[in-house]
Image (cartoon, rainbow, N blue to C red; front, side, top):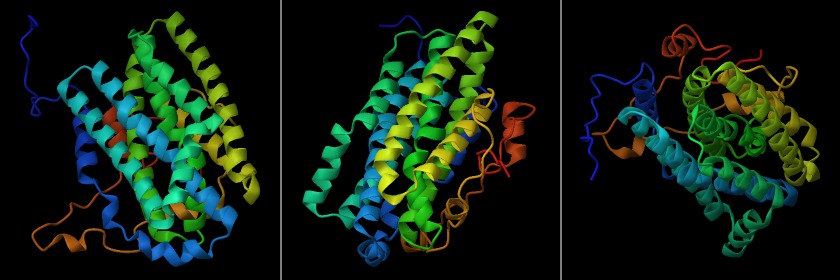
Length: 339
């Protein structure tokens, strides 16, 4: 038995000035995919071309694998290394949200695909080399026994890379269609997931900045070099993955731009220099991000005794207050605006 007494969580005396706020934000915006009528998109799905359907469902399947990784490996790893009950609770809740995201993608398969088509897609996930490389690379970082400031920072950073950049090759096409008014109900799910992931990326980036600030100058120089090498490796892999998903739709150039845009968001969140020049993302994708909340009242069927708390996005002031003086470049959505 441990010699140290086990303490209870005291929510009246938070361990830091931001974790409880993120926990409350997570709980207030909790949603479930069953409440969104995916069948509304059934006719649109049938009207899509074969290549459009292939890209949509395989991009979603890749996202399912990455959210499964975060829910089963990433968040439990970070939770186990975090100090403080409230931080652990926040990361655990975040992991549960990742599991909801993974289930959402699986429900899309169930809605739009036959059983044999579902099996093909899940088989593709297990054999797709670029997707498996990305998963294996990130698993190795999570499994590294180094728990120094540098070691923990690495784990936090690869989690942020997923949440803030690497998911977005998969997000592109659903946003692209939703921005055209196609697959709109399914687009609602993607927008809800993106809102979640934006907050996850900001929260974990705050933890990463703490670890970076605790390093000495030599450690920080090493960390920056590791970040640059890791980003280059995963970016090059992501370009190859993008070619597989989008070449048949002639969208690879637009998706690559979207990925670079989000890697710059990642750098801003981590307080590091941007890797890529500023670029505008495709206006239809931007429209897809902004077109959320237009299809239905998610929670009207829950009964008159239940009212879902309205969720307001984090504001610039919220971020400044959380980080104690400001968080460079952060937008009101929890992501960075490049307008």
